[in-house]
Image 1 (tube, protein in one colour):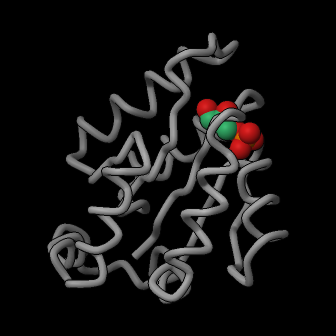
Image 2: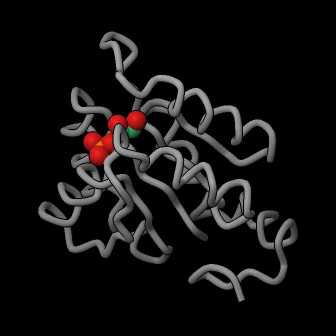
Amino acid sequence: MNIALIAHDQKKQDMIHFALAYEPILKEHTLYATGTTGKLIMQNTSLEINRLMSGPLGGDQQIGAMIAENRMDVVLFFRDPLTAQPHEPDIIALLRLCDVYGVPLATNMATAEVLVKSIEQGDIDWRKVVNPNKTEEGRT
Ligand SMILES: O=C(CO)COP(=O)(O)O
């Protein structure tokens, strides 16, 4: 599965703890992250992350493009609902594309835990049917 990990600044510590806690599951998958989130996860875990641009500089849009191209299977986005974000339109666009394409999306850690356990159990293996030509690494 291709999994996107994204966290706003006030949620980055939560994301690090989450990545550490679920490292054994996450390491079985191909991970993508916005720039700063990815850097912090790599500094604090042994996970390999494909880092995109920082969220405010286009990283959210890059993940949105992967969703539109059927190259992203799950999005774990720890949002900060209490801080105004300069790139709010990009965030809304990313969330919208998850709904357009029916991509599983968690916007807080509690739901992300449920999704990661679902991934481990194979509950989201239907993504392989949605895009049967896709390898774990991306497109064939
Ligand atoms: O702003 C973000 C998501 O909207 C996250 O971006 P960074 O991981 O680069 O901080």
